[in-house]
Length: 207
Length: 148
Image 1 (tube, helix red, strand yellow):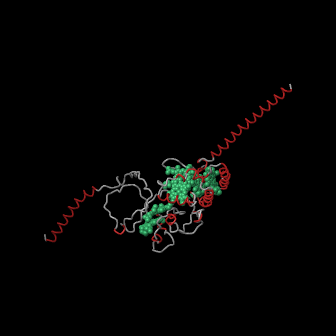
Image 2 (cartoon, chains in turn cyan, purple):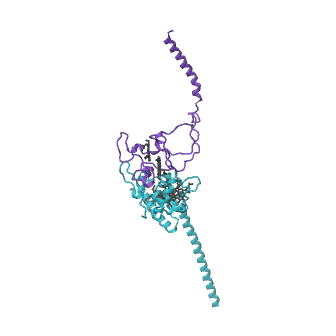
Image 3 (cartoon, helix red, strand yellow):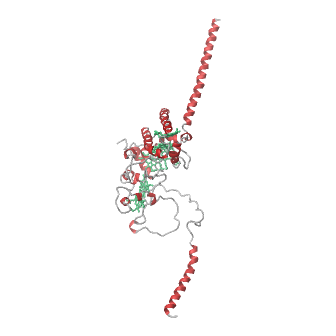
């Protein structure tokens, strides 16, 4: 009798345990799946340009560039360049991006004029980030180890061989690859707040 | 009719005759444009930008040198002049480019400025990139002797 009870209790427990595991497992899948779906959805071009701050300025500029439209149709969308692929850096970037929600609510860049006024700060943030990770996002698609210098243009060829050997990274030379630039100090015309030469062309890290 | 008047009349007839002969000649000149000016412009040919090359020899004195490289997507705005990022006196060494000549520092009154003059800001007004298009008409132009 008691043996039977024990067994059934054990069975109950086991059934319960299995059930819990199964429930937790499915919940996990749904949650994780949902989480990933949200993560993926917030990585789409549609999502980024759902805010007019992004659509009217940077998106319009990007539409004239090679990463939007080209001969082969292989594209780079916003998140390819702005959101890291690796899990931890991606989460950090996503959390930082809540600042954009705040900016949206406060209307920090909700007119073209305000956007221009803030572009210097925003661009410098992005340059700092890319420089710190050795332009990882660019290198996700472009592996300089596989650059075929015999078909690259004369200027690219020379700049890449010397520049990369000196420890420069893509963003050191390719600023403004997808959008118009903030004012850059070139000593032409009147003085104004502008990106200084040592930020625009940072000295190489190896000497 | 005296001699003077006769000569005048002859000259007049001759010039009228020439004019009449000239009229059909003028009509045989066909426009390189391909269509009548009032018609819609024909689509531009599918020309390709030539690959980057060393500087192209100049053809005449004071010629703005041709651009021997691609310039697609180069930003020239109030914020930034991409051309000057490689061709300015401060940047040319690192970029391996020809530096802009000092003539570009002169304002329209001949005064010297400390950098490129506003009238030289838009480089592509004078310096043009090259495609693989064929010349529209044959010609026998020979570069000036000093720059050959």
